[in-house]
Amino acid sequence: MAQGSGGGFGRRRLLQGAAAGSAALVLPAAAGAGPAVAAPALVRGGRPRAAWGVQAGDVTGSSGLVWVRSDRPARMVVQTAATEAFRHARTWHGPLLGPGTDFTGVTALHGLPAGEQIHYRVLLADPDDPRRTGEPVAGTFRTAPGDRRDVRFLWSGDLAGQGWGISPEHGGYRIYADMRRLNPDFFLCSGDNIYADNPIPERLTLPDGRTWRNVTTEEKSKVAETLAEFRGAFRYNLLDENLRRFNAQVPTVVQWDDHEVHNNWYPGQLLDDDRYRVKDVDLLAARALRAFGEYFPVRTLRPDAGGRVYRVLRHGPLLDVFVLDMRRYRNANSPDRQTDDPQGILGDEQLRWLQRELARSRAVWKVIAADMPLGLVVPDGPARFEAVAQGDPGAPLGRELQIAELLRFIKHRRITGTLWLTADVHYTSAQHYAPERAAFKDFEPFWEFVSGPLHAGGFPAVALDGTFGPEQPFIKAPDRANVSPAESPQYFGEVAIDGGSGELTVRLRQEGGEILFTKTLQPGRVGQ
Image 1 (cartoon, helix red, strand yellow):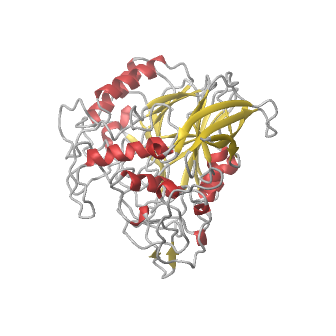
Image 2 (cartoon, rainbow, N blue to C red; image 1 turned 90 degrees about the vertical axis):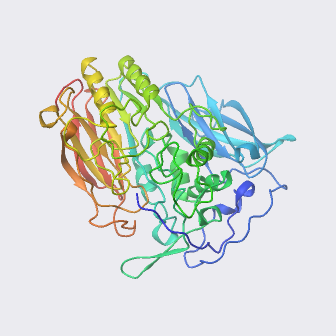
Image 3 (cartoon, rainbow, N blue to C red; image 1 turned 90 degrees about the horizontal axis):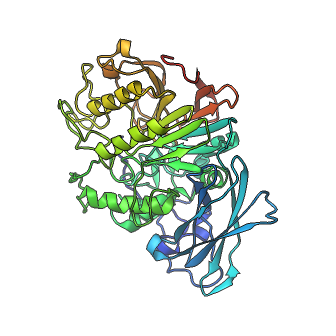
């Protein structure tokens, strides 16, 4: 989406780099805008602190990952229990946190009871004296059920985009408080967790003349190029108290998209962007993925950027979530009219993986978590296209060929209960795809739901591509580009599965919790 602009810094000292963590989480007063103070050296005295909060991720019926960041070298220790009293707690000894991972770390928990609330707390111990520990930081999550019971999760994407950062005057990232009140089983973030290419300026002017004031940091004063700057971009969001509280209560399933690196990037690209000294996108992406793996608990990634983002999360007998990576394996953005395209937007290896995992899934519902929409025409300049569709309503071309192959596979293997969830376009909508309306007809009807942004500029709706026969029964989008969070509501989606009937209900919501659109799907029914 549209790019943001650079700017100054906030007045209050916000600890950066290796030292960030202790005093930095007190948000500056909205009126206190001014130059940032240089970061102090690594904290040495006292006990380790986990002031950036905790978060859990990739939770299954028997396992989960717990994340923390320390303000200095520390040994991570996790205790789990059935209640907040932590009687009969189980202790998990985690990694040593140091500068190699920006003092972040993840501890894997195994052998957990299915369908239960797990309370955990993280202690950070002095590596030289394990008896010296900091104040514990607590969190909780529910493991996936082992039987048919109700499941509810939320999804959205696009955080701190177009320069709209944390504004104390506007309540920070308020949408996380709305989502936390719903107490979902987990949250699926569909990408653009940061905007590495959008600096956070000290202030922005709203159309009515009011001033939007941001909390700012040194790393977010420019586009991210170094590993330290990418780390700082992920760390910036954790300055928001709403997000930290949400993380402590709701586990995440996270994927990435373009703004973790650069707008509309693809492998092999050389940037034509005067803001960057580093033009090699592959180098930027490697640094971004390393920071992404350091700041999120993802079971298929290592902190050194090894591994992959795409994976499947099995959430009991009713739900499997297939998390895609439509960024790292794609071909170059182009007019996308080629008649043969084996690489497509997923790459051959990821496509075969998805087909295998869908075929072996026994879940009633199979959610395909895509970081880009299928039938919405997302341009990349005047003659190239960023997503799957390219505006030609005829037979599949370019990246559409790979999606056509996947949809054909789903039909011929009689795989039921698939639906697609995505974000990216900075508005919310529902699309129903059906062969009777399509140029390509060898597939079964399915739904795609779009939500977001979480906290970024809103953008007008884009066109539909008729290749797969989309119909749009609901859409809510601004009528102009980059509408601020102060002017336009932000959006998230909710998926609720009834444990008895197996019915799945999608609700598109806006900030404040208001339901905009509801669709209920029946298990095993084709053509709904």
